[in-house]
Length: 178
Ligand code: AR6
Picture 1 (cartoon, helix red, strand yellow):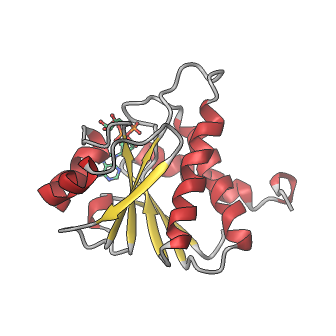
Picture 2: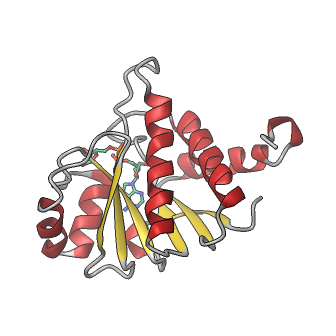
């Protein structure tokens, strides 16, 4: 596996990284799942800053401070709601990863943790999402030299297994984009 990619099972709010990614909604005003957990752990100042951002489009990302989190930054991205696969869901999810990496690069962030965006309340199939997450990450890391570590924080064993499987598969030459 790429030495800069880690896959773990755990809670993203507890990660000791410079930035964590939030799977938010277009309002950026909080919600359930990982979004709720991040807002609870960061404290009310996070919501105050989010209000000033005036929302975020699906497939895009915006950055705030991390407040009471160990992470200095939170990158909020809005994944697509799964609608069967023919509503541009793959490209929108890839866009989330791409924009998060762009923000990380422009802010000099060296370590970042992602949840499995869109695969909870938004029902994107986990296997398909894991494949997109890992391929976008590998693509970005090929040219980027500022990111030292990308951690995928899987909340449950099924998600963890999917990420592990596709990370191993991505190393096979037949699937290589090189
Ligand atoms: N750490 C890491 N992963 C987590 C955590 C956590 N603390 N909590 C949940 N997950 P979801 P979505 C996993 O529903 O599908 C929110 O209400 C979860 O098991 O959080 O993008 C927003 O406000 C799943 O694997 O995000 C939006 O309205 C993954 O995080 C909507 O949900 C994503 O699940 C976004 O839906």
